[in-house]
Length: 331
Image 1 (cartoon, rainbow, N blue to C red):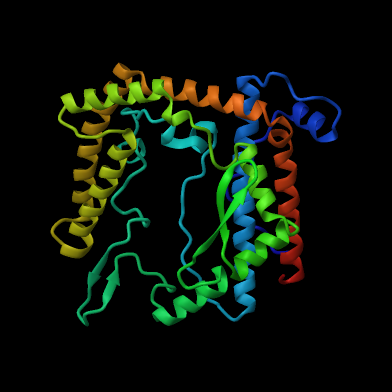
Image 2 (tube, rainbow, N blue to C red):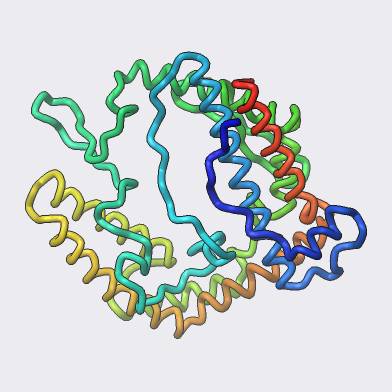
């Protein structure tokens, strides 16, 4: 039987709690405590990621059965191992200057995700990170996306969910078929469940006045140090853009070696991270973000306990259906 690709492994609710909940032998803790909320949320997010990977594998098999053999290159990323990694820099935004430069913000010059275009000798666009799919004629790429997503532009369909508002699903093609197959014809209901379970979407914690005040304090502190960023994510975006500039100098202009480009980026990262960490400490930004995020999240999922605790089982059932489709050789 073909295996599903291994992505983020489900982090798991504590074993005894999970067994009791799935067997229906005990009620969830009321109110939900922080430790339980962290464990269940981490598992729900990881489970939703695994469903996405299952959908992609089934949709890929579907287009292969239609005659397509060359696929877009998959984006590689480091697997998060805890709730901090799963929630990322939107909540846990403070850098650790003690880490190696390439690990502080996770940015490096030779990152394959930084793909640049330049004009080749024949006047055609050339990518710095070529792959077999991007080398195909545009018409072939369009045909692939039409088969996969229902249109060359990969347009999604907006769906209105009863509890969590607007979401999107594939507009057609093999991905739409995969969504319907794995969710047993109820993919919008799955999306609604994922939202209620905290696995997708979120609360309004980021616009809380306490977060806004801490962000202003962080931004003012950074301004005093010569930077102009409203939020830490803007700082990270600027460093990512800087890595792109250095990659262009290395791969396109040939004005520096990779080692020189990496050294230049490392120097900027280390200097920036020192100031960033100092301003996080002065503003207590991460402390505020973490406290407010969990305050909002716990209140939200406590109002939707059944969905919060049952999502893992639903995601697991969808992965089983995916294995059945793969074993059968197609939809």
